[in-house]
Length: 431
Ligand SMILES: Cc1cc2nc3c(=O)[nH]c(=O)nc-3n(C[C@H](O)[C@H](O)[C@H](O)COP(=O)(O)OP(=O)(O)OC[C@H]3O[C@@H](n4cnc5c(N)ncnc54)[C@H](O)[C@@H]3O)c2cc1C
Image (cartoon, helix red, strand yellow):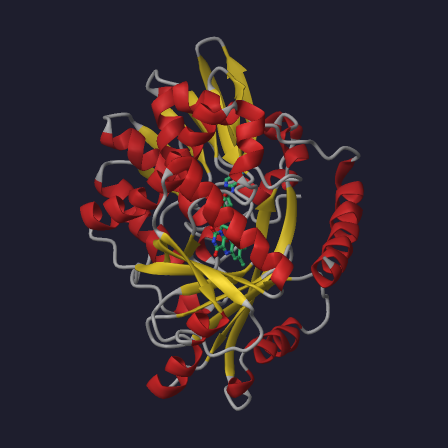
C-alpha cells in the first residue's frame, strides 16, 4: 500500500551528482512539536524552513529519504505562472485576486533566489526559460499568453521569438517559435532539496527518514501523527505527500486524493557533451519546454549533459522511447550515449490548477502543482506557514480556485489517466 515507504533513492543522474549525503534516523520515540510535516520534498521542507525561521518547533517525517519523491527526480525547471491560463483565474476569482495569484507565481521564483543566497545552497541555479510551439496554432497560444501577462499585469520579462530568433539559441528545426522568459530558470533539484533540508537541520528542525506516517488521530487540542514505529504529538500538521497521496489510508488523506491524477514522466541524461556539441543544442543556458499537453522538456546540466524529459504513457523500454523523442528534436545527437534514465509521478489535477487548503482547522495541505511544482512548492510552504502563524489571507485565495475531483477509486483513476493520455496525444497531434 505505502509504495514509497522504506525505499532508497532511485538511480539517477541527480543522485550520482549529489553534493551532500544524509542518513537521518527513523522516529523511534514519542516527540512533541508545534508543527509536524509529513513528507520531505520541496514543499514539506519549505514549510518547515519558513516555520523554523519564525521560531516554531518543527518535526518532519519522511517515509523514505529526503528528496525521494518528485523533488529529487524532476526536470528542475522553475517556471512562473500556472499551467492553467491566468484568464481562467480572472474568470473564477476576479481580476484583483488573479493579479495576486500572478504576483505570487513570480514570488515563487524569488523565493528560490532568496533561499539559495541566504543558505548558500549549491544547486546550479540559472535563469532563462523558453516555452516552444510546434505549430502556428500553438504559437498563437504563446502570443496570447505574452499579451495577457503584459496587458493585465505589466509583466515585461517575456519576449516572443520567431523561428529565426529561436534558431540563434536552439539547434532544432521542429519549432515555429517560442516565448522566452528571463525570470524563470532551472536548478539541480536533488541538490536544492538537500540544501533545503540542511538549512532546516541548522535551524533545529528534526527530520526523521524511513518513518512512514500510517495514521492521523485528531484529539482535543492536538493531533497524534503515528508512524510505523512511534508518534509525534503536534498542534498543527502539514500533508506534503504530493502524488503519493493515493497510497495513503483515508484517515490521512480525508478524500483530497480525489483531486490528483498522477502522470508518469521520464527523464534521460546523455553522457557529458563536448562544448561544441552542447552549444549545437542550447547555447544560452536556458531550459526549454514545448507547449503540448504531453510535453517534452529539457536543459543542459552543469556538466553539459542533455537532460531530456517527456510525459508519456508508454510501458515499453522507456530509455529507448525517450532517446527517439530526443533524436526527433536533436538529430545531431545520434552518436551520443545515454547514461541514465529514471521516472517519477507528476502531481496533475484535472484542470491543472494547484490544490492548496486545509482538511480541518489544524491539518493543512498543498498538492497538484501540475508541472510548476519546482517553483510553487516554495510559495505553498510560505503561505501555509503564514496561515499557521495566523494570517491565512493568501491561502484563502488559493482555496477559492476550483479543482474538480475524480470519483470512482484507484482503478477508475488509472483508466481515466490512460484514456486521458491517449486523448491528449490525439489533441497534440490534431489541434
Ligand atoms: C520526472 C519529473 C519531472 C518533473 N519536472 C518538473 C519541472 O521541470 N518543473 C516543475 O515545476 N515541476 C516538475 N515536476 C513536478 C515537481 O517535481 C513536483 O511538483 C514537486 O517536486 C512536488 O514536491 P512535493 O514536496 O510536494 O512532493 P515530493 O517531492 O513528491 O515529496 C513527497 C514526499 O512525501 C513522502 N511521503 C508520502 N507519503 C508519506 C507518508 N505517509 N509518510 C511519510 N512520508 C510520506 C514521499 O516519500 C516523498 O518524499 C516533475 C516531476 C517529475 C516526477
